[in-house]
Image 1: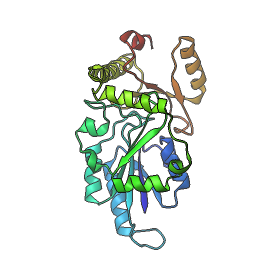
Image 2 (image 1 turned 60 degrees about the vertical axis):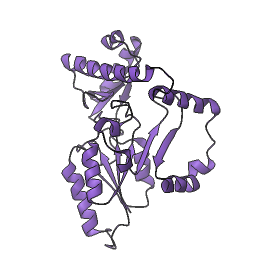
Image 3 (image 1 turned 45 degrees about the horizontal axis):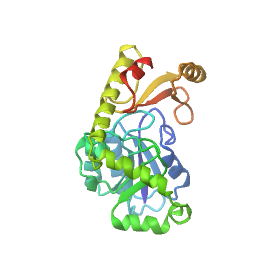
Image 4 (image 1 turned 180 degrees about the vertical axis):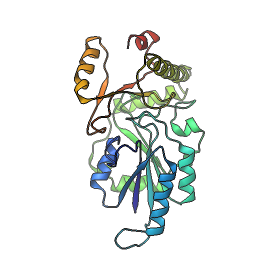
Length: 279
C-alpha cells in the first residue's frame, strides 16, 4: 500500500509543513510508504502515481495493493481550494483511492464542501471526513464512505472501540446545526448564513488586498492566511490585535517553514461588515 499526501506548497520537502494534524500523525505512524506532493502541480501528482505503478515497492519491487491519495478540501494553512475534478480524474485513471478531509470546507452553494463547490459526485470520493469542532461549534467529527469501509473502521478503529461516545447534548447540537444548514428546520437561516459567509469572505479578502497585505488562498476560501514571515513579529502582532479585542491564530514553525509564518483568519457568517472593517 502507498499513501500519497497532496500537500499545499512546493517550498518544503517535509510533508509535516503545511499539513493538517491527522496527516502528520499518519506520516509518523504509517507502516507503509508515505509520499508528499505539491497541490499546485497536477503533473507532479500524476508522475508519482505513474512511478508507483511502474516501479512498485522500493525494496521488493512488488506492485502496491492499493494507492491512497490524501487531500484537504480547503488547505488549513494556505486557504487554497482543492481542484477536486482534476484529482478525481487522476484517481480514476490510475485506479487509486481518494481520502478527502473537509474540516475547513464550508464552501459551495449549499455549504457542503468542495464536492458541492465543484459540482462533483460525492460517490467519487472513497473516504470523506470532517470535524464538528469548527462550524458546528461542537466536538468530535465524522467519517463517511461505503458500508464495507465504515463497518471495518467500527470494528478495528482504536477510537471507535475504546473512546467514549458523544453525549446526547453534543449530538443534539450537531443535529440542530445540520438541520439548519439543510433547511430542515423550516427556515432559510442556513441558506442565509452560507450566503453571508461567502460575502464576508470576498469582502474581507478584497479589503486586505486594497490595504497592501499579502494574503494566501483563493477569493472564495473562508480561511484567510495573512503573511507575517518573520517569527520575531508573531507575538507583537497577536498582542496588538488582542488589545483591540480581535482574536487571531498566529501560525509558525513547525506548522509552516520557519520564514513563512502567518496569521490565520477564519471567517464566520456571524461577522458583520463593521467587524471586518475594524480588523
